[in-house]
Image (cartoon, rainbow, N blue to C red):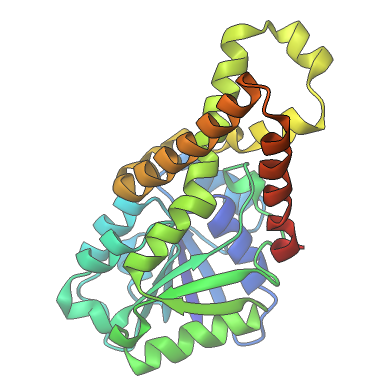
Length: 276
C-alpha cells in the first residue's frame, strides 16, 4: 500500500521509520507545513518525497500526525478521497476530532491514539521502534468502515502495538489523568524552580528526581497548548483533584502528622504494582 504522513515530527517521523520495515508498504510520502521540517525529513530519509494535498489524496492510507486543530482542518480538505481510502489520526485528544469528521468521509476515518512519545519534537526526534510494544487506543471504531478498520488493525498489529478500544469521550477523560495532567505539572514544576533558583544552582543540585519530574517540560508548547485547549474540562478536573491531594499532603506535613504522610506515600507506591 502507498502511505502518506501529514506531520513529520516525532510521531510522524518515527511512524515512517517503522512503516519502512513492513513488506506490504510500497511507498511513504510526507507533508509538513514547516519548510525546515520538510528538508530535514528528506535528509533523514524519513519519506521518499514531500507532496501536496492533491497527491496525498491518491494514497491508500493517510496518517495525520499533527495537532488536533490541524487534524480537523485536514479532514475538511480530504472530503473527496476515494471510498477505499483509510485516514488515521494520531491526536492526543479524540472527542472533538471524532465529532468534527465530515459525514461524507466518516467511514474513511479511524481515530487512534498511540500511547507513546518522548519530550523531543521535530524530524530529528524520530526514533525507530517508538511504537513497538506500546498501546494504541482505537476510538469509536464501529463508526469506521469495515475496510478501514481492517487496514488500521493490520498496520498496528504489524507495528507490534497492543490495541485497546473505547469511546472517544471516555478516552479523553482517562488521557487527562494519565498524560495531560502530568505534562501540566511538569511545566509548572519547571517554572517554579526557574523563578526561585539561578541556573548555576539548578545545574549543581538537580538530580534524578528533578530531572524526571521536569523532563516533560521539554515538550512542544505549540502541541500541548492545543491538547490543553481541546481537553480543557477533563484537564481542569484532573488538576483540581491533584491540588486536593497535594493540599492534603501539605497539611499533614504542616501538622507533623508523619504517620499519615507515610500512609499516603505507601498508598502511592501501589501504583507501580500495576505499572511494573
